[in-house]
Length: 209
Image 1 (cartoon, rainbow, N blue to C red):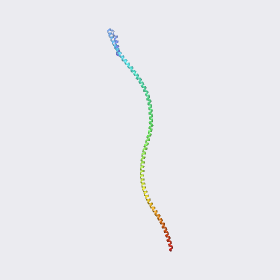
Image 2: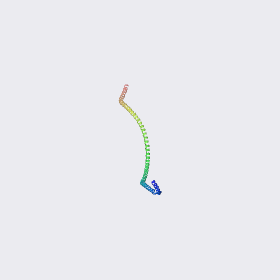
Image 3: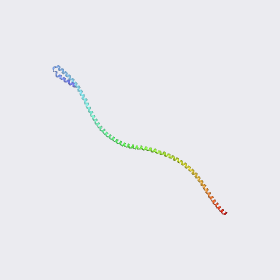
Image 4: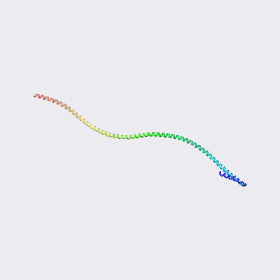
């Protein structure tokens, strides 16, 4: 476009100096006409380009306006989403705080339970030791029971032996009591006879004197 304007100025300058002759002037007019036609065509072409550029730019401006509106709407939605997200964040932070409190309480319970478990484990160890001691005592009791059984068997044997001896002694006692009864009877009989014999002897001795 700048080139066309320069050509037109030069042409007009040439026309101003073309007063020296008709031919020269006609040539210049012809040249000016040709140059004007060329400039017209060039401007017409440039106008089409400008018009096309204007349409494209207007379309671009419209699209940019639409994009701006869309971006603004998106920004508004994003801001609304941010507000929602901030609200959700606050709620989640509350939940986290609640969970922290629950974790702390549960940890206290875990610690208490672990202490109980530790105590129960200690009790288990003590009970195992108690079992060993009880088992040792049971073994001693079994040994003592075995000795007692042996003593009982020995006592049984002794009792049997005593019973046998007692039975024999009882039999001998009965025999001796039988003999005692016989001896008492015989002793009484012979005591009576001896008394009578002494009396008879004494009477006979008196008669003899």
